[in-house]
Amino acid sequence: MTRIRGDIGKYLTSRRLRKAVHISREPELRVQKLGGSHDVYLVDDVHSHKKFILKSFQEHGKSTSKSVGYMKKEYKRLIQAEHAVHQEDWVRVVKPYLKSDEGDFLAVRYMRGKSLGSYIRKTMEGGGGADLYEKLTLLAGFFGILHKRTEKHYHISPTSISDELKKHARQAGKRGAMTHEEQKQMERLIDRSCSYHTIKNAKKSLVHGDANPSNFLYRGNRLQVIDMERSGYRDPVYDLGMMAGELCHFAMRYGHDPYKADPFIGHLYWTYAGNFRDQPGTFIRLTKRNPLYMANSLFRIARHEYFSKEYKRRLAYQAGECLKSLKKFAK
Image (tube, rainbow, N blue to C red; front, side, top):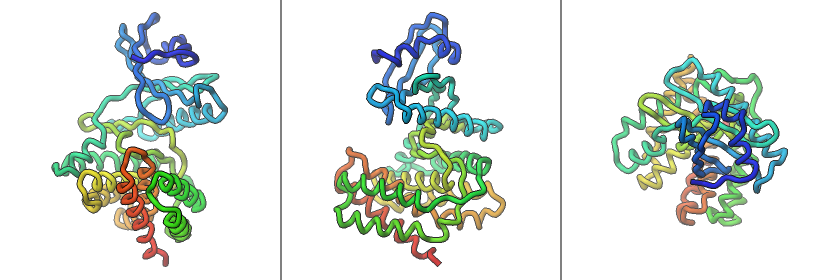
């Protein structure tokens, strides 16, 4: 168990928090620190057997206006996403219990399930694909509902996409994925790719923002969605393309062939397009933008320190091939 001190300890023992998560008046809390970009804890009350997740957005143990802003943003986005899917019985977005008034802590429901990543890995290592197709169908349904019910009537900014791609490419380059010259060439390719009209015509919707397999859990025929810290209004293909990049990465790492991901990426897009009146037309429009966001996903993955330099270079190469493929949609 993890020892908790300071602001987090005070927050855990607050009456408001105990009331929000329905734990006993005199709780005996067991706290376990989990992984994540922030300090994340699994909290279990011995007496009531209630469990919840506590996220701290503090930076180096201190609250800042920026960290408080991140906390408030995730709380708001979770409420929005939960409202968008509340009528569906096959999908559940993690429920936020309570945000701190003066700090940057967020308590959310604890959700158990088997991660999408375990299904992807099993399939890419040679297992049957039926389970993965089924899980991706549920995921496509969630994306479709979330994006459709939150669509805005204004277009995305190609500049913001270009800036994010360049940032991730530079970070990957610093980790050994590219030489300095290769990185400069990649940035020129990114500028060209973001100038195509297929990108400029996209409208914004609320997206999950961190569509990696660990954020989607399954219990039987129900999908459970967690961690919307990076959620915001972007091109809906942001989510689809990120998942496409993850599928490609799993195919490369565990199946030793990036093209093993293609039928599953196609299934994700086709099933998602089924949420709209013109399924074939929607599929075509979306997949034209996929390479851009898939490249962004691959650059993000290539930043991780625990991959070999050789593997990072393979990821960056695959990202470059995605960007080059956009040229055929330039006209």
